[in-house]
Length: 78
Image (tube, rainbow, N blue to C red; front, side, top):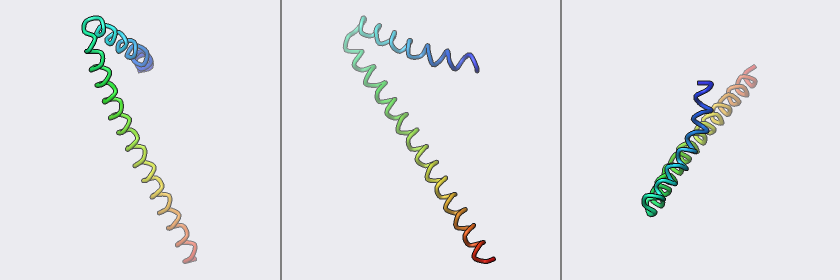
């Protein structure tokens, strides 16, 4: 995995650019469809990542508030 991840990060964009070039060479209108599809997938993926991070932050905030409440109530009892 130490070698595979950097290789994938470099070769994937190169492959995408090559595919877009070939699509333009074969059929010009196909490039528009490919770019539109890749943009749609990127937006969907970005939305998913944003939602997961937002929910994780909310959960951490709830846990911190619960811990602070438990800490303050234990101090009042003593």
